[in-house]
Length: 235
Image 1 (cartoon, rainbow, N blue to C red):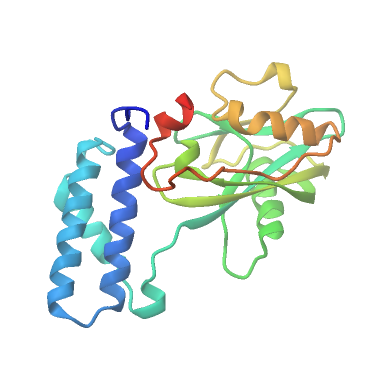
Image 2: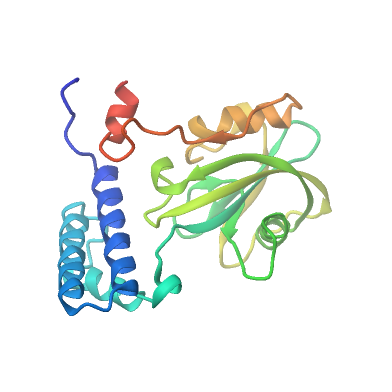
């Protein structure tokens, strides 16, 4: 076995969120006071790990524990799973992709949004594109299912379902709160702060060109739990 590399910032966040999810799920199902104490202790360990990652400079260990405890449910409702988001790779029929510049971070990415209750995943794609950019679109197919934390898009555990969509109307209009700017871009003209394009870009632009592409997803790590993201990159 090759020597393990030091834990990365992404590793610490992933381990912290995984431990916290196990502890919160345990708290949601157990009736034993003894087990509750142990799960709460695990939450404190997870908070220590997250604090060591310096994910949020203005929060300390107790802040993390308090936040996680507030989300503990009961029974099945307390089973902690990743949130689900939808992304939309929208093309205009001329080889260009629709990107938005996020108002909070300044990075560019295809339109994305949380899944809302009462909407199918494809309906969320249409709704988010319209709200964030002013463009009307039609979903064509799913081209990616991605782990947001593993891709480095977010600190919140989430899975993102990414649709290839075709623009059918509307006018470019940035959302006044969520997006700082919107625009159409060719593959060789992407803004410098386009996040994660080395990961999703080849699949997205191949699909835009009409090429057959398999659904992009995160390959299983071997073994899934112990392998570092840095190990993935280094083989």
